[in-house]
Length: 568
Image (cartoon, rainbow, N blue to C red):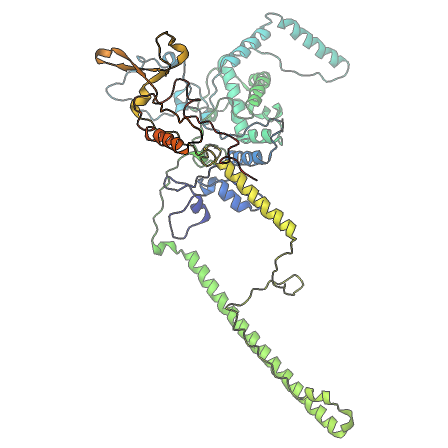
């Protein structure tokens, strides 16, 4: 949890916000902690999980999906074989490279004039025969392919003529049998401008009648609109207000011809619109900054909002003043009501006291007339009992806290639960074992020198440069060689000009004569002292002997010696 440096009052969200000055606590290894259950406290869990995000963006759809997937990943079993698509936060991709950029935007096509061209025309007004409100449709490769195929079928070219004849014959046969003919979309010859006009009208009517068509298709609550909902838009001649220049083009078809075009184009348009999930076929740029519902990137976009500077006089609005005045008046009315209630209770208490006194006088008169009717216990009815004041206990420094149960009684003092000695011992041993296991897990990458306290004898730098040559690599068996073994060492060094020099060194191990008698303790002691004296003065010998590191500095120990034997 990040630490807050500000000592002043702050909200929970400000305390959990992570900035570049926040001190974070780094925890290594695994810790024994209860997992955070986000369902217990929804408000607290939402604030903790969305720390660092603005308050109005905490409920963003993609952010909550990622947090829910992260929370469910901890509770999911590791053996589950089902694969769930990973949730992610969509971000615009800006890494693409256009391959034909030079062809689309040649460098020598446009030259800035001496005076820049200024115009007040909109984009739609600059396009020939464009529709208003940006509903201009540009046909692409798929539209071009469909239009060519439609025109070929309409002209009777290829194998489509036979299909057209069969469909016409089938419709006539159904009509003779008394059935309604199935009117399918008949191909009709149209130009590219007429096709783009029909597609643009479809897009415009869909935006006006069903602007949230994509939401309905995603949730499954809305069906795709049929052609009957668009028939009225094509049943009339194109109006001048439909175009950006407020004039109908000369090539614009009439209402009957436009209806035939729309009936033929509707299947192709509906297919492309459904492939887009209900969105417009040509993607549009959402320039509305306030459209936070349909903009998925606004949660993760920096917004420059200038804070309104307020003074003390402006902070207290008239509504706040009236609300505070109303609360003060209501509190005064409540105080007056409580005073009236208190005085009424005092009056009732006084009346009950007078009635009690009258009843006591009547009882005394009755006892005077009939002395035998009274008993000693009746004397307590003549006066009120004096209440005994309880003195506070001086030995306790503070008052004990008592918790009230559901039935109105107070619970006794908490007592330690009874536990058998064996259970207590097992509990303590389990705690010790857990602590030892945790310590072993933390120290798994450290070498424990307590178990292996041996420290190798330090060697000088010059000794480490010499490398001993093993006896098997050197032929030392000559008739004149002495009985004492002679060891050889070599050293490789660099001289001036990059030359390499090989130095050889022959030395004899310094061995003192062993004592002749095994029982001479003084001789053994002198031999040990002699070895200890020359142990650290041998600077010319290599750091490691000819037999390698395994045989270096080894000592033979008698396992049956009393010094090494231990009695359990």
